[in-house]
Image (cartoon, rainbow over all chains, first blue to last red; front, side):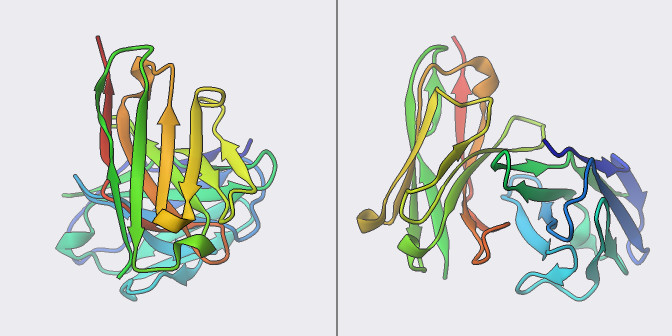
Length: 109
Length: 119
């Protein structure tokens, strides 16, 4: 079973700053990785799929990169509404299933 | 507009049963695989179960295998999760989520329904 490890657990930044979040897989997942954003009391929202493709309606300040085992979600200039928890996710064919990272909380400094 | 609306959550005693439902609208439900994902209070996301568009392929997380059953009714645009032998650790918000077209990610989510297992 593939394990996804996110770092840091908490990231404290100010609006306007650049955020860099990491997700590391215990074995290669090629480019089959997604990022989600979750705000308090809300369902998660798909941000990035296939490591670097923005989902529909996602602002250009969000970008994803990486392949194999190391992935990064970058928010180029933080807006107030970007402070939330971010999860990475991958799907495996065997054993069939889905794995999420433990999340990174992006908080206002 | 794609909408997923969960219902059926509530308080249940350990060992009890509960059936969750997810009503889908705004897309051709019968063309998409569907999933249940849960989130314990203050914790991260945990995938629970998946079902393919025609119910041919069904998968479960080890933590619920043998206790939970996923099903769907394409005529009613509905997804279900029958939960038996519930445990305290099953306490969570349960989300219904749609697979995106290529089938590797969750592109739409419901708002969730809370299941609390407690005596």
